[in-house]
Amino acid sequence: AKNAGRNAFRLFRKGMNELIEKRRALEADLEIGLKRGEFELYLQPRVEVETADVIGYEALLRWSHPKRGMISPGDFIPVAEASGKIIQLGEWVLAEACRLLETIEGRISVNVSPLQFRHSEFVSNLTELLRRTGADPNRIELEITENVLIDDDKRALQILNDLKKIGFDIALDDFGTGYSSLSYLSRYPFDTIKIDRSFVSNIGKVENAQVIVRTIIDLGAGLGMNTVAEGVERIEEALFLAQAGCDELQGYLLGRPARASELARDIDPAIAT
Ligand code: C2E
Ligand code: CA
Ligand code: CA
Ligand code: CA
Image (cartoon, rainbow, N blue to C red):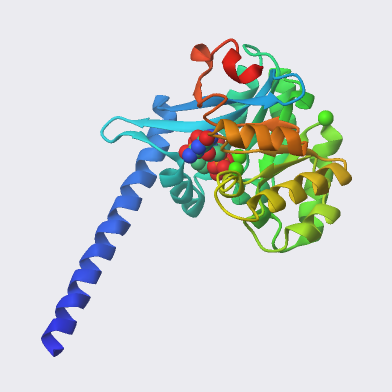
């Protein structure tokens, strides 16, 4: 038994070392990848329910790694966040989003990671970026998750107010997945609530899911915020959301993330009716 324990431990340590090695390699590749232009922003349409028009896009980061192929942000964002490289990466994303604004119509929403948001130069770098590119901040929405807000409320509030003053809209991403969303809603100046995909995909499947989604939409409306449903995949979900008064829909049903050059001009007319 003692031997078995020792063996298990050895295996565990081997596994951990491999994991650490993999992370380290990815971390080093991140910096090189940025220099070599391996990153790209895909755009996913946000569709206004009332008009069935695409009124903007969410920018989603893609990395085509020379050896590993396409790596999804779920795999490299945490590494970038842990190593601090997210600062550089996030700056690239914002600059690229500003550039894309010249080629598309409507607005772009950009994901901002907690470390990036709290970086002491975040607001001043953004100001400088706008000056340099001439991009209109009123066409940019910044998406943050509630873990950005967990501690140090005053500072987060100050940053959000500064961003709003510049003209950016602020969206609360993945709404409903965290802990104390309700108190955040009254404390911080959000323009938009994004209803997390986990709620949306339960519509019509899990009892009470409809009640929860409807309540979030009513809450948003009551607070004067725009509500966006994420991860809409089925007609049934879209119809329910529209009837419940959700302002915008986003998901594979309405359009997958794609290169700006490959965006469909119009959404499927079958959906737009
Ligand atoms: P998110 O902000 O919640 O983005 C939505 C994710 O859901 C995207 O995954 C999108 O491709 C996916 N999605 C959209 N519609 C559907 C649908 O109908 N069904 C399903 N199953 N999925 C759908 P993606 O692109 O893999 O991004 C994952 C996460 O990585 C994002 O979640 C966001 O947290 C993060 N991320 C992506 N780009 C950036 C970025 O530029 N900066 C930062 N900091 N984070 C990013
Ligand atoms: Ca997002
Ligand atoms: Ca604005
Ligand atoms: Ca989300």
